[in-house]
Image (cartoon, rainbow over all chains, first blue to last red; front, top):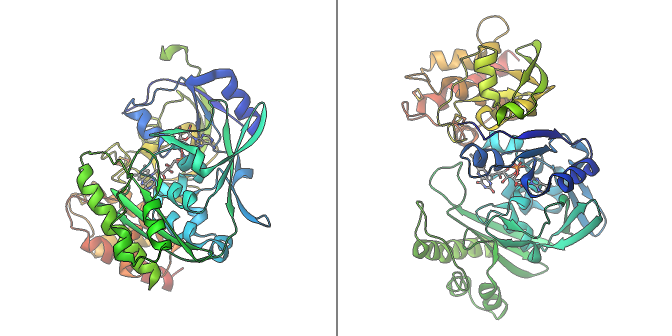
Length: 274
Length: 162
Ligand SMILES: Cc1cc2nc3c(=O)[nH]c(=O)nc-3n(C[C@H](O)[C@H](O)[C@H](O)COP(=O)(O)OP(=O)(O)OC[C@H]3O[C@@H](n4cnc5c(N)ncnc54)[C@H](O)[C@@H]3O)c2cc1C
Ligand code: FES
Ligand code: FES
């Protein structure tokens, strides 16, 4: 399968990329690792007329300690995250979940920025960033703005980024992470989660987020509230499907996904408590 | 419409020899290697990024070449199964041979390339590491058992002769 024809533009700077986005408009797409975009283009589910390749902006590959937060360049690949010593010391959960994305070949190419900007509720890393209250930095020809993770994921494959904006950096607050557990349920090891559940303890409180339980990554607020009020993990996990709206597809029905959410949240909570 | 799209000029080293070619932007790396370079050892299995039959090394890292544009590999150094052994077979190829890590052979080139990249990152793997490390490669014949044995054996032999 070959994608529909497109014009190929290589951006050698962030400015070049955003200028090109503004010039070519809605029909243009940035190409980072291509691990989500190219499969869609091969199936002709995405038919951009211009691809702006930002894959060579290697100065956007970094994980830096920036005082009160960690700053991660948007083009940082999953492989880099899963082997990062800065993350090992400061944010083990992001490192561990990066190692759960796809397979080695996918992690060699796919980027954190691409995972975030794609807006797929089945992606693993956005759920981590939502749990950690990350902030996203977006650049356009008009300047720069920051967007909170809770405002960023708008719908299925839809984010708060404007068509002329490029995500340049992901900022993760440096908080006291004391434990985490990620439960990813799938049928083939390399696949996306049918459902995923993350429990992470931040400053003594347990945060819970869900993968593939609606059109965006979600915080399981009802579970978090029950835990804060002293509920045991197994009792709190019963609320895992509350306010979710999972889809039914070839891998699972919505009902089954709700069941999985309760089971996986319980397992994740029991693991962090242990 | 495609006639109006300007071609891109790309140049890359494949198995140590460098050539420049003009390609349509939508040309996939696997097509480029098979059709332009005539290197048909790299297979197209699923064509949907799942099976790993198309795995090659791009700057020493395993990549699914059905999910990469040739234009993205401009300037890179590519290794395919044809370029693996310097003189004779690579230790991973030898191990697939002696451990009978294949049946029909369709997945083999991709498996071997994925294993070479995996062992470079993880020279002393456990059996579980190998199974996880090859999760991006599917085999419809062997049940994986001998493939895993072959990769473990290759790891041993590469420790003796680095
Ligand atoms: C076989 C396979 C298995 C996978 N399994 C998983 C999995 O288990 N879990 C998981 O989370 N993901 C999985 N993925 C997807 C993978 O994580 C991708 O790396 C990621 O979703 C997209 O990153 P990318 O750099 O490849 O983005 P691309 O595919 O290049 O881009 C994706 C989208 O984001 C946009 N974009 C990219 N970068 C930016 C930016 N900086 N600013 C603005 N827009 C941008 C693009 O225009 C495009 O619309 C899998 C992929 C494959 C092929
Ligand atoms: S042909 Fe590329 S992954 Fe199957
Ligand atoms: S040997 Fe036949 S697919 Fe693996």
